[in-house]
Image 1 (cartoon, rainbow, N blue to C red):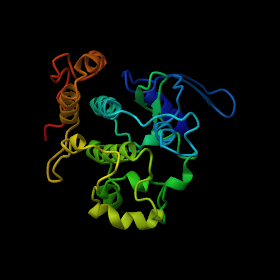
Image 2 (cartoon, helix red, strand yellow; image 1 turned 180 degrees about the vertical axis):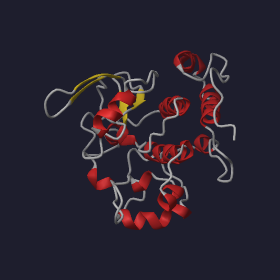
Image 3 (tube, one colour; image 1 turned 60 degrees about the horizontal axis):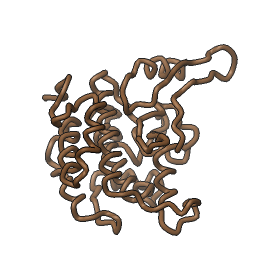
Image 4 (cartoon, rainbow, N blue to C red; image 1 turned 135 degrees about the vertical axis):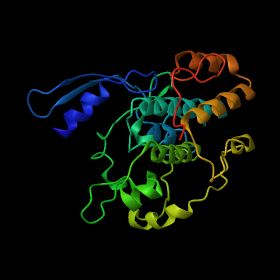
Amino acid sequence: MHFLLEASVMKQFNSAFIVKLYGVVSEGIPAFLVMELMEKGNLRDFLRAHRPNSEENLTNASMPSKLSYFKWAFQIADGMAYLESQKFVHRDLAARNCMVSNDETVKIGDFGMARDIYYHEYYKPLGCRLLPIRWLAPENLKDGKFTVKSDVWSYGIVLYEMVTLGQQPYAGLRNDQSKIFQNSFATKNFENIEKTNYNFSINENEEIRKHTLLEELDKITEFEGDSNNFNKIDEISTFMNDNGDENNILLDND
């Protein structure tokens, strides 16, 4: 029943960067979902398949371009901003729950439906349900409260997954150990992140708003010299018009 309720919510979404759910076949067991085909699978596995000299890189694929990183970051941020406008908190944003189309557009999917597949990446404290602990904001673990702001924290972890080509957050630690480090999470340099990327860092004391992320990603991509290509994204964005301005909705003015 919970599965069908989540599906009924997902079917109402209409965003260029949310995987479309076309329908549910509820007769018989198990139920079936009819969803948009995302040919290249989930973002985490897609990234790992681009690691140089990796066994997972079966096609000798090159590392993603810097523009690709910014494009994917924009697409995920736009999809999350749309969810916020619909008063929906995802609660499980991670690279494994973002899907990649044939043209390498990234869309948000798996609204609570992928937990059994990646069971080892969830942690269950005594008396609690399974939690994706490595992607959770500290306040989620402290009081169990999920908000659009905690989704922003998870978005930051997704950016970490992107620039490390799918590395697990807090790699080398057990799920219960990673909980200890979340209040002191610190970024570090990675070989495949160029200096320009660090200009996107936001002071930890600043309040982060999704439409601000969209604006900054738009500016960065124009700076990288491919503004004509990026304007195609602006045209289908829920929140950005061709001039990079906010459109349709104001987000989180508290």
